[in-house]
Image 1: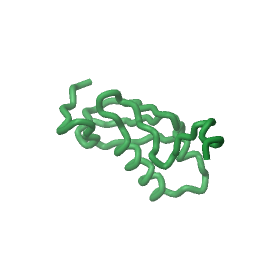
Image 2 (image 1 turned 135 degrees about the horizontal axis):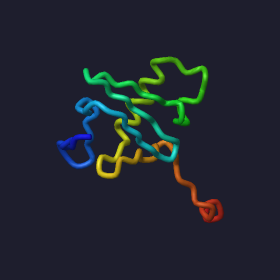
Image 3 (image 1 turned 30 degrees about the vertical axis):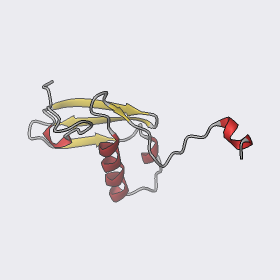
Image 4 (image 1 turned 60 degrees about the horizontal axis):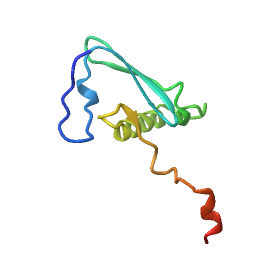
Length: 96
């Protein structure tokens, strides 16, 4: 696997992935990306929580892929938690 230079801190260029198989994980599961010799990417979202809904169509899967691309930490290879998921502290319910 080759080294991919990032343009700036936290940026990861998915379009320049060399041929191979890549795995990225996060709190919601993991994704597998297969890149062929022509640079075509095949995303496997079977183990990603947001894609488990059988009623989701291809457009919604594309939105999920774009969301994952934005959240990937280029330094660690870990997909950051969604900003939609608010962390709740058990003790916060008593401090209101």
